Length: 500
Image 1 (tube, rainbow, N blue to C red):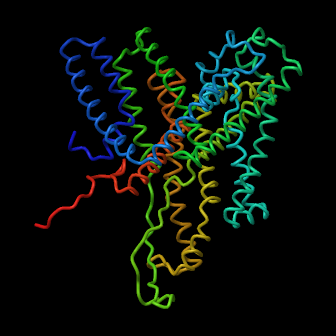
Image 2: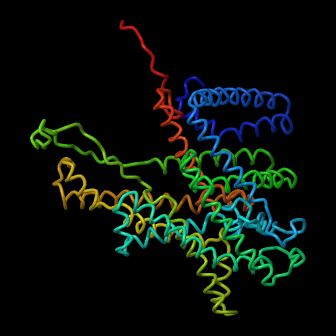
C-alpha cells in the first residue's frame, strides 16, 4: 500500500470502508474457510492502512484549534438538523404514520424524500427541507440576468451581496407559504393514513402546521448560513448532503436483504454492485474536477507602476471547468419532468393521455430517461452561457494587462473563450446526462432496489461528490496554511535537509 499515492489512499478511505466491512461480513458468513480467510486478511490489512491515513489526518487537525472548533460547530449543527428531521408535526400520530410508500417505493416522491433525509415521508417539521431556499436562489440568480436592479446589486460588492441574500430569504418564505399547504393536503396520497391525523384536516391543523413548516425551513436555512460562517464547508450544501447520506444505509440494507434472503444474486452480486458504485464515484470526481487550462501571460509592471508591453511576465492559466454548470441542469430538467405526466392527466382516458402518464411517471422508464437526458444537455448549454461571462473575463484580462498567446485582447479573446467553452461543454453535457440516467441503467442491468439505484448517479451522487471535495479542499487549505501536509497533497511534509 506504500506504493499508492496519498490522494489515492484518501479516496480509498472515503469510499472503501463500506466494501471492506462488507468483505469482512462475507468472509465470516458466506464463503468457505480458505477463501473466507483470504478475504478477511486482505480486508483487515486495507482497513488498517485506511485507519493509519485517517488517524494521521486527525492528528494534524487536532493541532489547529480554529479548525477543530469549526469542525465541531459543523458537526453539532448537522446533528441538530438531523434531530429536527425526526420531529413529527403536531396533530399527526408518529406511531401510525406510514412512510413506506415514499421511503421504499422510489419514484419522484422518493427523490424528494431522499433530499430531505426522510423528513418528507415522516411529516417532519423539516419536511420541506432546504429545497425552497435552493429554488429561491435559482430564481434570484436567473433574474439577475434580466433585472437591472439585481445587476446593480451584484456590482456593489459585500453590501449588494447582503441585499441579494435578504431578497432570497423573503422569496424562500413566499415559496414555503405556497408549498406547505399543498404538502399537508397531499399527505394522504403520500401514504399517511387518515387515522394519523389526530386533529383532523381542518384549519386548526393546517394553519399551525404551515407556520411550523415555514419556520422549519427558515431554521434550516439559518443552520446552513451558520455552518458557512462558523463551520467548515458550504452549509446549505452540507445540509442537503447529510439528508442524502441519511437514507443511504437503509437503502443498502434493503438491497442486501433482497439479494440474500430472496436468493436474488446473493452476496457476490452485492460485492459487484459496490465495486461498480465505487467506480461511478471515481468517474464523478473526475467530472467535477476536470478543467481546461487556457494559458495567459501578463505584461511586466515597471517600477513606476505602469505596464511594459515589451516584457512578458510569468505564464498563468484560466481554468475552464468541463462541468461549469454543476448539478443545476439536472435540477432544471427534473423540475420539468413533472410536466409530461401532468399533461397526460389533462388528456384524460385517451390513448395519448394514458401513454404520457405511463411513460413519464416511471423515473426508470425508457422515454422518461431519453427526455431527461435531452433536457440536461440543453440546460447545460443554457446555464453555462449565463454563468460563465466570457465577455467580462476578456475585459478583466485586458484591464489587468493579460492576454492569451496568439489571440488579440478584447473581442477576439472573448470569442476565443466562448468557442473553447462551447467545445468543452458538449462532452461535459454528455457526461452529465449519462450520470443522470445511470440509476435507470443499473436498475435494469442489476435488477436492484429503486432506493439503492438512486445512489448510482443523478443529482444525489454529484452533490455528495462535489460537497465532499469542497469540504476536503477547505480542510486541506487550513492544514497547508499551518505548514502541514494537506489531505490531498502527494508527498511528505517538508523538512530541513543537509546539502549533499
